[in-house]
Length: 373
Image (cartoon, rainbow, N blue to C red):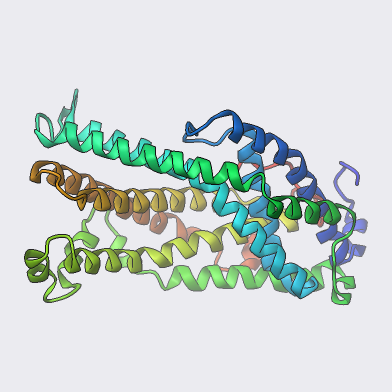
C-alpha cells in the first residue's frame, strides 16, 4: 500500500472491496502494533490509570473504534457471521479498555467539582465552602472510585492475558492479509459505498432531530432537575417512607432514559466520522460534536456516581447533602453540553450530499493521516 494519495483515475476505478481492504489493513496493522504496548502499560501501572490513557492504550482504543465502526456501517459487504463475531469481540475489548480510564475521568471530574464548590476563588466563595460534610464527601468519593479503579484494573489485566484476546489478535492478523468480502464489494466504490455512508448520516440526522433541543435552548437551565418531580406522583412519599429506595430508583430511571438518546447519538456521530474517513473527507465539525457529547456522557456518568455515593449506608445527612449538590452540579453540566450541541447541530450540512461537497482529503480509499481520537 502506497503512502501517496490515490489519483482521480485510480479513485474512479477502485472497487468498494479495494477501498475497504486498504482501510481495514491499515487499521488492523495499527491494532497489532498498539496491542503489546497497551498490555505492557496496563501491567506497569496497577490501579493508577491516568485520566487520559497512555499512548498504547489510546491507540488501541482508537483503532478498535474505527474497525468496529467500519464493520457496522459497511457490514452488508462482509461475510455476515464473521462481521458480527468481529464486532462483538471488538465491543468487548473496547468496553474492557475503557473501564479504568473511565473511572479515572469520573474521579477527576467529581473531586474537581467538589473542590471548586467547597473552596474559594477570586470570583467568589463556593456554595459548599466551610460545609461540614464536604471533607467527608470527598473522602467517600475518593475511596469508592479508587476501589472501583483497582477492581477494573485487575479485570483488565486478567482479560488482556486471556485466550479471548489472543483469538481477537489472530483475527486481526488474518484481516491484514484478506478481508472476507462478499461479491457485492466488487462494484465501483462510489456506487457501492455511498449508499452505506448515506445511511449512517440518515440515522444520525433522524436521532438528532428527535432530541428535545428546545429544552436545551439555554445553558444551565436546570430543566432536567425540575422535571424529576413529574417522574412519579408517589416518588416523594415513597422516598420519605424508605429513604434511598423506590423514589431514588424512579429518579435514576428517569435520568437514564433522558440520557440514553444522547449517548446513542454519540455512537452515531462516531460512525458518521469514520464513514467520512473512508471517503477521504475531513470531519472537524463531527470531531467537535463527538467531543461535546463525550463531555455529556462523562458528566452523566459522574452524576450517577455521586447519586450512588449519596445512598451509602450510615453516612451523615451533611455528607449526603454535599453529594446531592455535586450530583446537581453534574446534571447542570449535562444540560450545558446539550446546549453546546444544539448550538452546533443546526448549522451543519443536513445530509451526506453537503458533506461530500467538501473536497476529498486523500481521495477515495486512501486511509487518511492518523487521527487523534
